[in-house]
Amino acid sequence: MSAASDEMAARIRAILGARPDVVEKKMFGGVGFMLNGNMLAGSTAKGALMVRVSPEGLDTALARPGASVMHMGDKPMKGFISVADEGIETDEALADWLAFSEGYVRTLPAK
Image: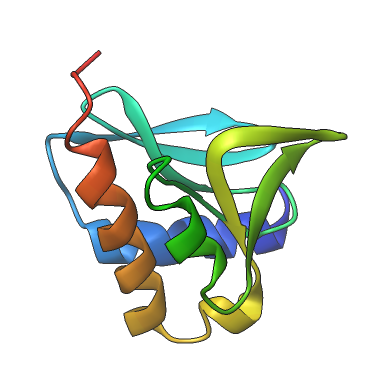
């Protein structure tokens, strides 16, 4: 993992706090945060924020500053958004993204 990935993971961790329903998992060269076994958010290898969004919330998410469709190599990752630094400059902005994602992920069956 890179220093940027570690920094983003630390910011996510600080906002989510110690919760029994959230588990950290190393993935994609970064850290994923799983809510009831479903991917909620994570830090990418380059330190970007990755969040899960509903199909219905995709356009709303993409309209926000710094948001773009998440890609793995050349392929778009369905249901995931990457958020660049300008979209998460403050902890409040990061917390808002995490809450946006959690609103959807809570509707998914636990794994």
